[in-house]
Length: 157
Image (cartoon, rainbow, N blue to C red; front, side, top):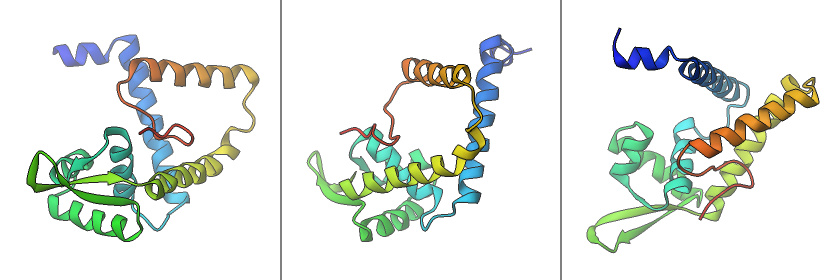
């Protein structure tokens, strides 16, 4: 058994694997129940910009796992909506930096609210103890995961 597999077999590794599976399930539910006008790649792009700040197109493409031409198409749509803006990179006049606008942040917030509204009926029967456990889990993740959150009300920059 390799080192990576041994780490996954620890109690924490198993819990994290189960959590990841549930997060993927939530993402699938959200995308099938609430097919918005934008693709998940559009929202991943906006979220990445909200988390990281201004980025080059190539870095965005890598972060969202699309080709650079694919990212250019995504950015074209987002720019038409006023969700992103482009500016010349002050460190390299040949490069362009893309940043999220207040309109883009509002799109993230609205999408998050739509998803929560769709998921909420599945969680209305939670006991107070279960809600506390979920809150504690969110706090634990926030404490141990680098980066910021683009959840409603938690936008950065």
